[in-house]
Image (cartoon, rainbow, N blue to C red; front, side, top):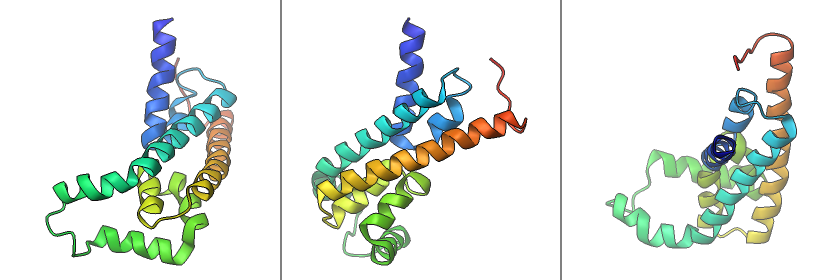
Length: 151
């Protein structure tokens, strides 16, 4: 019983950091596709919820602690601004599970002041989209024999 709880909790926590982990590791843990998709979406949305609401506090209190000269732009911050200007809220939410991490995407949209309702809606929609694509892609790769898990 405890091992089952730890298995689900571990995948959930990994999903909070990067949405690709549950689809990759879920089959090895013996989870079915629906469980993997639900864990992936739950982890993504937890990160989005936390970092969207804490984004302003993080921007004001945590970032100045680590960034010595907040007036200067780094390569990473310039890249984030470029992504935001080029793709907007829908593009950032689309790219968050794919390229960015859930905390990174949520902090980016919080930093630019995107409306929370839109952020939650688009993150949920694209989280569902990417988790289904990844889960069934891994499942397909296992079916054709390119991926194997010993269990």
